[in-house]
Image (spheres, rainbow, N blue to C red):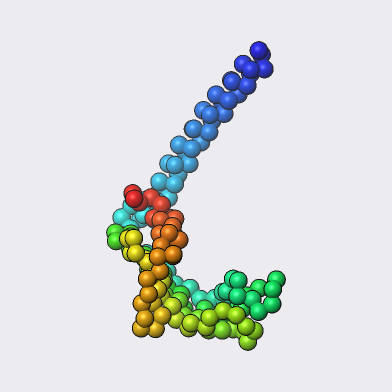
Length: 147
């Protein structure tokens, strides 16, 4: 009986401790968000350059996929319209096989629609919808937006 009572007391103290800690953490995150201007943020854009590899496109089983140099990468997010535009320009960095060259690609999502643009051709991409919406709402500013 003492073991049960001790366990219940320990559990209650743990819950009280965790609840207090969670409230402190929430207040800290809210202060950080306010300092960054998150409550009034409606759009976000960032750019990058670097290297990427095509997964599952290796010419030899068990080896990494082909390497590409990212010439430019721009992601534009609009939280008011729930839309994202990702503009990616890449070039093959090595001669080994696999991976479509597609030098410039644009991936878009707006509301419940996703599509890809390669060159002058736009094509629906319903299979990418969930992933692109997930990427939108898991950005630091998107996670605080009501859905």
